[in-house]
Image 1 (spheres, chains in turn cyan, red):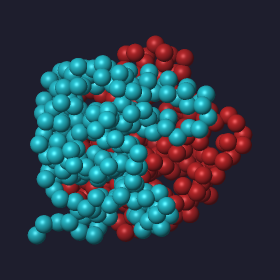
Image 2 (tube, chains in turn brown, green; image 1 turned 90 degrees about the horizontal axis):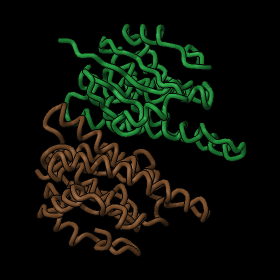
Image 3 (cartoon, rainbow over the protein chains, first blue to last red; image 1 turned 135 degrees about the vertical axis):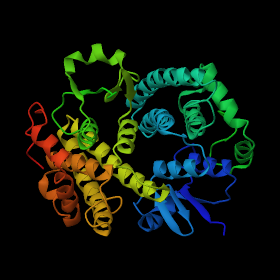
Length: 212
Length: 212
């Protein structure tokens, strides 16, 4: 019997922690209900989640919290993890580095003080340059894939982080890395992912075609 | 031939990202060189690391960055990971939750403004109460182990996070959870871990026996 999958995540206007989950499910051709929780409904929904957080992946009614736990589970399900310990270390290093950049980006997004925001954005640009430079080395070594010489969920996460950053620090800051552009191209060339990206629901106030 | 292991981490006065690595190696009876980098030496050491960060685990001269990648590698090496996909999801959820608390704790530690610090500590106490409450449910269900009914690296990470938090928010805030105290007892009863804890090098200005 086929399992039923529901992805619960906020209805927010940038690429965040829900999107890699939806992309992994799409990659695997696994149908899912895409539940978008509106800001005003969150206080009502929060106590129904396992850890008071989103995203949550519901499989046959059983709720799994923690975006990384969900992604790692789905990556093993759709075979986008490593085939042995050595590959998994390389994958984990890439994933954690991408998440470091993602977290730095989130940190810079919700600051109201203009001077402080400017300073955070400056630091974020420096960090992007440093970490994208390192990831570029990995992608060059693996011919357009980040963790090893075939698609992994690091490449999918990269495309999410790329689009988030392009939106926050600008495309010129993320487009200076030829092997990382090849990663993006390789991911977008996957039929199931391409189809998801073309048809994914709009985010409020953000053009999803932009920045990619 | 036996491999050579070196753990590189800062010489800091609280339980942080280096300690779970040292405890996993100790658990597995794997000898390692314990390199503590002093604050004043960091600018010199930083460019020699793969990602400008510590900890780094060096195996036969090859450097692995990213604490979580290192821990996950060692956990699989010493068999403190899950035996199947289902166990690994439970383990990942527990690990990510412990790391959420750890990060919140780090966030509250380096604030100079007294009012802001007070506020952060209040939020940290609330978060500790919420997350420790959830972890207590897991530990109760698994009879003194967090992820499943035997030792995993979540239990070792828990003891590190417990000691960090006891130091920052006080022992009464972390000692209110009987099944989590059982987790601590179970971890400290492991001969290799007990021996590491008894003999581990002093941290500057922090009594390592305290808070445990």
